[in-house]
Length: 167
Image (cartoon, rainbow, N blue to C red):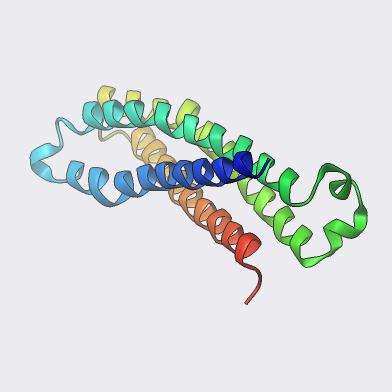
């Protein structure tokens, strides 16, 4: 059982690295480069291609995070404790609840961004890059991405507190 737990921890860290790393690469490298005037004509297509390529990796990472996170909680706490109200009123239960809330928000925002707003923004950028609706969709996609990244970092921080304890 301990081997399964340690494997879950390793996969959880790897999946979190892939998920957050992909977002950081997009925000810190890909998007700034595509905003340069010399890349303006290629930006819609390149962003669509890069995001599409990363989408599969990130959704596999998110699925791994959910599964390995659940395994870790079950190993550390046990299913019976999760049903006890006293568990959720303790510091560990409250931190876990906060992390779960962040994860649910991340999953929801990522789904809306990746399957609704992002594709609509990409289509609008290719059809009419300077139209007001295109700019609105791009801003919405950008803000959703930033909020998703911040919530992901919050979930990461809460995960560290869950494993290392409160300072």
